[in-house]
Image 1 (tube, rainbow, N blue to C red):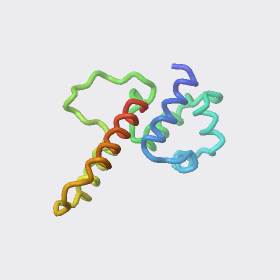
Image 2: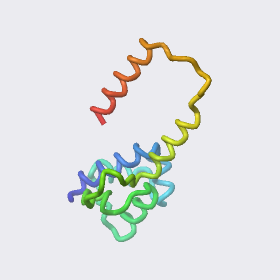
Image 3: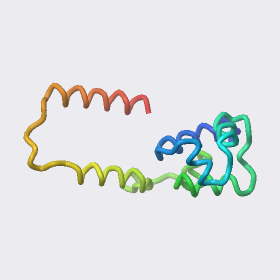
Length: 119
């Protein structure tokens, strides 16, 4: 994998985890400038400790980060962060709320569908 592709994957997982470049850089003990260059593909992140630090901070395994994901069953969820977000959303649901505004709900569904296609 080339530096640009690795940088894109680091940026993707950083955003997916809701982290800023500053927070991720702090977690791995690097500067924001270093991380920005890695994400842009200008600097290589293949030093011995960098990939391991990035994987740990992003909560992904090395195979996922470098794009060599093993085949997995559709019934297995490997992303604990997403499970936590779903759990939190379900716990916030008010059971005593009446039916929602259908026009508003339709707009929200359309927005979610567009966002899913663009992701």
